[in-house]
Image 1 (spheres, rainbow, N blue to C red):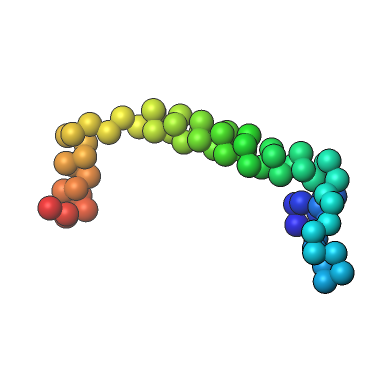
Image 2 (cartoon, helix red, strand yellow):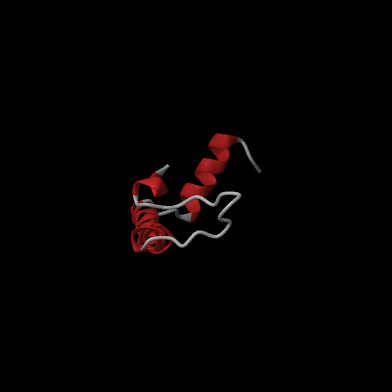
Length: 67
């Protein structure tokens, strides 16, 4: 698991809420903020490069045979 590489401590029966090291907390913050932001920017870039006009939309619907 990726979080184990940064020192994440899994809860156990003895320790239900272990104190996480700063490296694990930092990794969680990165995975919850920067990674989604980068993926969103990539999605926006792909959408920007694929302009969907009304004519193109109708053409795609015809190709799919959807009315």
